[in-house]
Image (cartoon, rainbow, N blue to C red; front, side, top):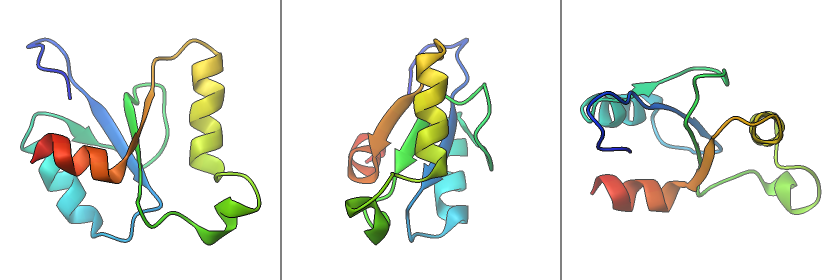
Length: 90
């Protein structure tokens, strides 16, 4: 997440099997907000390591599709792998 003082980051997870409460607590203790749906304020979509087995044969799922649409429309949303997220927050 950004280290800027005036920046507030919004994160959402998808495809993870971990407890949502743990994600939300980890984000909030670092000054961010865990959101329960994709919306314009979203800065990061963290894609779970477990994913969905269907992703090997079809689309990546509605959340990822929505974020790709947002990016095409000019929103700056980063897609991050769950392992990278946990490495970053250490």
